[in-house]
Amino acid sequence: MHRSSLKTRLETVGRNLWRRLGRTRHLAAPPYAGVIREAERCQATTAHARRFCETGGLERLEQAIEAAEADGHDEWARRGRVARRALSPRGTTIPDDE
Image (tube, rainbow, N blue to C red; front, top):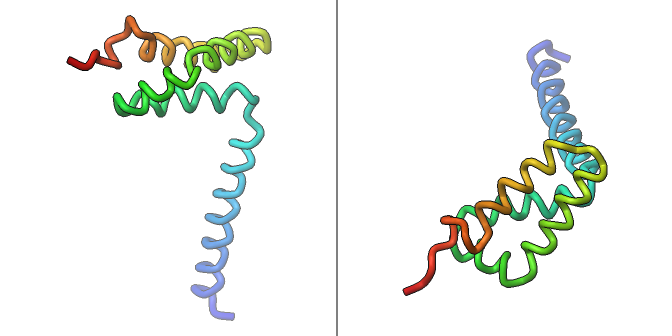
């Protein structure tokens, strides 16, 4: 086998392995991480933020923050609190329709 061909194959295998490890790391996240990530993504548009709030998202987010604090995962709890502040009705992320 030619050296450049082998190098190309090894690079491809490396990239595929890196992607799979990324997915595994994502799957290994605690259950409340999904709710916190969803809340963070919902801040992108007003429509997503409203839908999140109207479907009980703030309550789920509050539970996720409490679970993260109980598990001692301060970074997840902090991210959840930041998202909660941004998505709360008093926050400026979701403007009122007029």
